[in-house]
Each structure stands twice: as C-alpha cells, then as structure tokens.
Image (tube, rainbow, N blue to C red):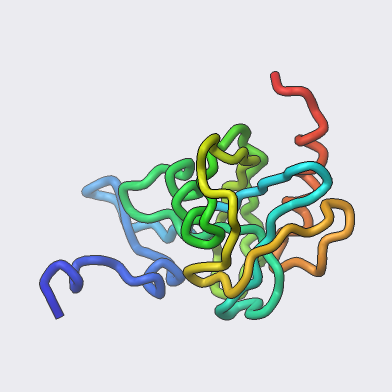
Length: 166
C-alpha cells in the first residue's frame, strides 16, 4: 500500500465518530459524518437512484454521498450527482440540513440537501453509476418508497420548488 493511500481516510473511517479538536489544550470532540443529497425536479418528475450498497440496498433514493476532505458541500453534490447519474448539475437553493442522529443506521450522519438544475449543454442521458445500480425519473407526487429520510427531503423540495426564488 502506498504512503498516500495509507494517509487517505477510507469511507468506513467517515462512518465512525472521529476524535478531533481544533484547540491544542482541549479534549477531542466527537463529530458526525457529513453528506449531501441533491433533488433534480423536471416537470412533474424527480430523478432517483437505486442504491447498490447497504444500507437500503435496492431501495430508491436521492443521489448524494459523503463530502470529501477539502471539498465544499456544493462541490460534493455536483460530483456525487455526476458519479451516480451521469448528469452535470448546479445547486440553485439550499433545501435544508437533516441531522437526526437516528437517520442512518451507519451512525450519526448529517446531510445537506440542495435543489438542483441541469447545466446547459451537459449530458442528457441518465445512467446509474458509482454506488447507484440504476437511475430513473419518478413521478414527483408518487415516488416509490425511499431510503432514509429522503421522503421528507422530497416533501421539502416540492414545497420549495413551488415557492418563488427570493
């Protein structure tokens, strides 16, 4: 294993509480992991992915994933969307922060959710990729059962999507 590979934290490492402290003379802090989720609504449909890995393997979900070290939440949602759906998107509005410590069986994982738009001139064809086994458009009003708290995120997105931009 290379020296660089040993220094890079694994995805599993993000799922365990990290003992860190920004202060020299204070005890370390336990912190939750950070993820992003994106909601792309077009017409009366929303783009979903079928999870290819546990937890919720086989269930439909909003595309998203873990924020990498040195990456902003906005950069992470754009990257995750491209990896899982093949589409180029841009965040247009923050939907909310979902932080219930019980929202994910892997541990305390906080997600930052964004409403997205497609980038002009980007790829048009969707495809499941990375840890998504499939990607497809679903009716916005009657999506299939969703993983985690994604049904709540989608309800918030429908409300926000209807509201005029400020």
